[in-house]
Length: 168
Image (cartoon, rainbow, N blue to C red; front, side):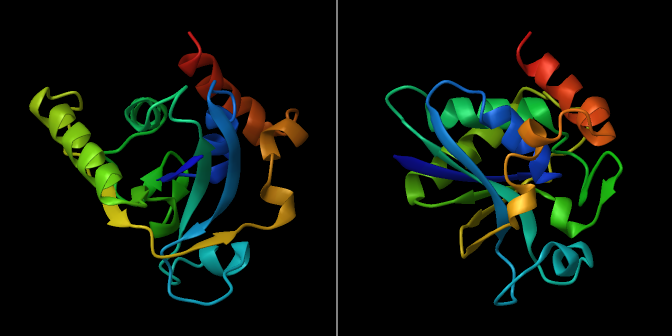
């Protein structure tokens, strides 16, 4: 299994979408690349820990490629808004690709360059591409959030439309 780690706003959205993809074995919500030893949701929400809300995606590269995962990532969020996705504001909601090896770094940088050259987005892409320094598992109630809370307002208003869009 290979691992990809992406930040694209709230990890609930990332998890809900990527867990539906063929070839994705598991998606785990967590916090990456911060500076404290034991981040919590409450501390990360303060915006001063350096952590991003992310999902660790375990996938089978024989079924789904890293490039395809990137394509989905850039379809489900706005990579041109710095430290913000919709109503979620703060550095913890930044657009980020935390690579685990040089091949992932190269693929990510080339994919972003292609998007820029094709002028896919009107504004500049601000997605952070950085080496994965750390990953800390989010609290249990964040795991499988959409599956466990489909009737919650956030799930109905934010996550469900993203799922509908990606699977059209």
